[in-house]
Structures are given as structure tokens and as C-alpha cells.
Image 1 (spheres, rainbow, N blue to C red):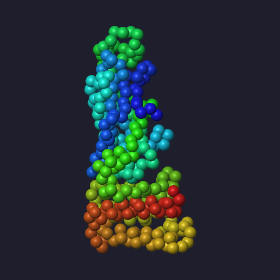
Image 2 (spheres, helix red, strand yellow; image 1 turned 120 degrees about the vertical axis):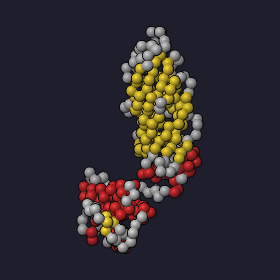
Image 3 (cartoon, rainbow, N blue to C red; image 1 turned 135 degrees about the horizontal axis):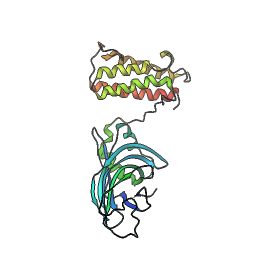
Length: 303
């Protein structure tokens, strides 16, 4: 894919606007809303034409066009009165915390991003030259709204791996996060795991809403909802020390979660529990349950 995006009008073949990576460096911020600031530049392709980016939203994926994974979304605009000179600006990509592991460990080689755009532009021209193909913006001195969309409006950007670590990974302070890929089954393909995955989702919801007892209740429900008899979760594994130890660990985690003050799903009263729980305990319980569920899935489903 070219490293410059040309935007054509639906009714014509002439490119009117170009977008590409600028020579400015990458930057990033961490915290509750991690963002990557991508250096871009825009320009109008023909003299005598005024251009504005009203709004362009985009998906940002890590990888190349044939193999990429979504890491975040962003948008920019308005950019007013663009001309034929390159106009540099930054576009912020907001990254969910689930994508941070991908940012920390991208595929080998240069780091490639693919941006897929949709939005609106405004164009007008001041020419009476009929030899130019003005289809789509025929009337001079009049603003024309131009939609941008579909899969042809894509831009690929490539960054040196060293720049990626210095300008993205380090400013985001990714070492301060617990980052681990979760290999959880697709409930549409493994329906027997739907209940456990649903409880995990509700545990995360309770975590973000600051309800530690509900987190503990949902995490316990995750383990209880695993398919099959609770004494036979690992029966598909070969007999031996590994199977015995992961079975004991799962029981111990379940006992710890159940012992904390918790809310049983579907009930309103908080169970007394053997110890009170706070938000720090809830973060630990939720992350531990997610990791355990991912590991169990890998052991018994081989995903």
C-alpha cells in the first residue's frame, strides 16, 4: 500500500486531497486514556482549490493491510483552508487497555500501522477553466460537501522499531500495566463457555463502576459457570502433576474469591464473607480470574 492516501470524488478520478505521515516524531501519553499521537500532513492537490477536513474518523490497526489487528480509534478535524503546501498536524489514536500488550510487543521489524478513514470534506474552486475535470465540485466559489468512506481510503504508516519504543512504549509507561494476552474462546463457537465469559464481562463492568463486592461475586460465578462438573474441569488433560496442580490452584482461587465479601449474581444483598474487599482487591481478583480462565481455555480447549 502506498504511504500516501489520495482522496478522489465519487464522481471523478482526479485526486483532490492527500494525507501522509509527516516528518515529525511520534508521541504518546499513558494514564487512564492511553493515546498515540500520529504525525500527519494534508494538502490540496490542485492550485485554486480550497479544502477543509470537517471530520475524519479512523480505525488504527497494527500490521499490514493483509494482516492487521485493531489497536484503537481516533478522529481529527476541522482542518480549515488547506492549500497546496503540506499542513502538518497530529491525530490522536485512543487505545483500549486490552490493546496495550500489542503495543508493547509488535511483530518483528518496522512497526506498521494501517489507518482506515471515513468522514466529510468541503471543497471549492475559483476557476473558470473548463478543461479541468471539476466533476463533483462543478460550481465555482461554492462549498461542496464530500463524503469519505469505504475501504479504499486507507493509509499505511511505518516506523522504526527503536522510535516506536522510545516515542510510544516509554511515554505510555507500559511497564506499569499488567499486560498479558488473553486467549478466551468465542462463545458463538464454544457455547458451553458463554455463561463464564458473560460473568467475566460483568466482573469488569463492576470493576470500572467501583463495586468490589460485585466483582468478587461475578469472579466466583465465572469459576462456577465453567462447563461440566467442577471436579472434572481438567479431565481432558493427561493425568499427572500438572493436571493435579492446576486443579488445586483453581480450587484455591475459587475459595479465596468466595471468602471475600461478595454479591451473588441476581441477588441484592452483600454476603458477609470472611474479609472485607476494596478496589485494590477487586483489581487483583478480576485480573487473576481473567488469566485463570484464559489458561484453562488453553489447557482444555487447546486454543
